[in-house]
Amino acid sequence: SVLFLQGIMHPVSVARLVMEKTPHVYLSGEGAKIFALENGFKEEKLLTDKAKQAYEQWKEKQQYIPKISPEHHDTIGILAMDSKGRLSGACTTSGMAFKMHGRIGDSPIIGAGLFVDNEVGAATATGHGEEVMRIVGSHTVVELMRQGHSPEEACKKAVERIFVIAKRKNKNLDEIQIGFIAINKKGE
Ligand code: ASP
Image (cartoon, rainbow, N blue to C red; front, side, top):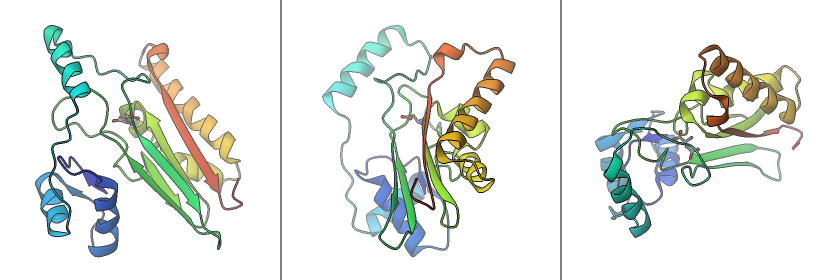
């Protein structure tokens, strides 16, 4: 995985190289960038005009209310099974909009945003990263499948667990948005 990697177009491909070429699981920040540049990636300006405009607009009020809504999140999670029944997955994001500098979401955290156990199944998440991380969501989904739950039941149970915790903390449930996808070894 790579975390806090800025200015590199396809961080998910850098993450793959961390897995394939290093003895490590995570590289972050400057170290991740140096690794990417050494492996043929180019530094690019990734700020789009649309994002810049949205930021300029946000600056007028500067309210720190990180929001998840269809306009404010962009995670792409992919799970795949090949012709031999082997599972794999990827998860990539620019993260929640208008977050604090240095904030890490669930997506690059193994077990939170993505978890693949080739013996059991795989899962990936989108939505409020903090809520997903609190239950190590994708790992939870895979463990529920290990206990015999279908992928659908496992995803549902993980979402319910998040909501129980949020309720305990008196959070407004209408403001929390989470999604999981999962696949088991049978390809369901
Ligand atoms: N999960 C991401 C985060 O918390 C947001 C998203 O799903 O787009 O940063």
